[in-house]
Image (cartoon, rainbow, N blue to C red; front, side, top):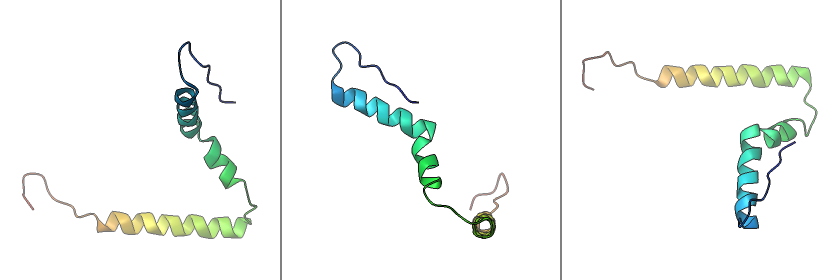
Length: 71
């Protein structure tokens, strides 16, 4: 549970901004969105494989430049 105490002389807007930042950092909303719908294990497996392929393609795109040479 994320809590934010309003400090003396602090506006509600400022406290709300701190609260939103804490919630974002804790990953609560990300977890809620993830659990919003049931995903079958077979679909989960496909999504994971697709993400791995995308990461591999991204790694391939990076050009290796040896140290000491200018592109």
